Image (cartoon, rainbow, N blue to C red; front, side, top):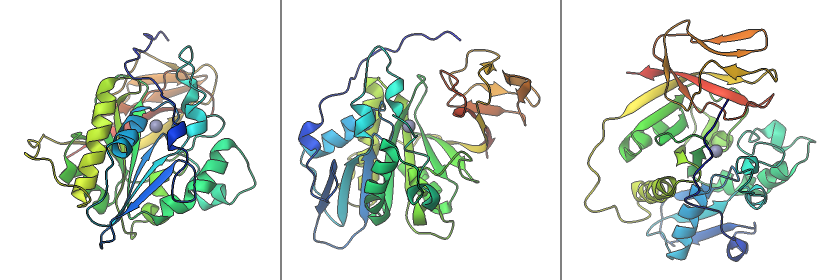
Length: 312
Ligand SMILES: [Zn+2]
């Protein structure tokens, strides 16, 4: 596979000034309004090289944001991976050992394995568990339009549709299939649970546009729950496009190859060949099968691509 090198419009900055928080956990900042209202968590850097979230979180902190009601918590998750950033290998700092966005099951959190990510998840667990509503800010390796990702609970869909931008939704009716993401920890992973938990994928990691989308999404999310004033005038409504996750395909062999370069949003007809993985063929399971987040570099045991179909 050939790839254009990424354009670095936004680069990591030193987060030392944000280390000392006030919630008992490094890089976690909490502001209580003293008035009744929801506890909202804005979380950045679940993946270390997804720096749009860092831009949004530092924007909130640097502008001295305070909630009008309820409580606001702002966190930087995988700072250790973030600090490993090397512009010569900009995709490596996604994680050090484990994917911090796949370890939020009780089994992993209370298991015997150890890694920087598992230690950090165990530190952040009470922070995540304390939040009524969660926005987890991410970005994509490929330069594609922004989209929401969320478990297919009505409460998540209602919030994402009300937020309205970005206007693309990847809905997971049966979870992710490759581990438990932060937004499905505890009650946020239960159909009968309470509270909204969304991922926003803001565009390509190093684009200024992704940083702008992240900041706007964070402010929109806070306004939705009444923690900050709504933007005036409100954004014009956009036509919403929703996709249902059918399958999370994993890389099984070192011979994994897409049949053509993919960046995401390519559409395949039922039976079309999408990739080969050693002796296995990956074919579209339905018409209008739309791929999300194809991997830039296949790594055995990691995700290869998400297969979806449009939702009416
Ligand atoms: Zn991510």
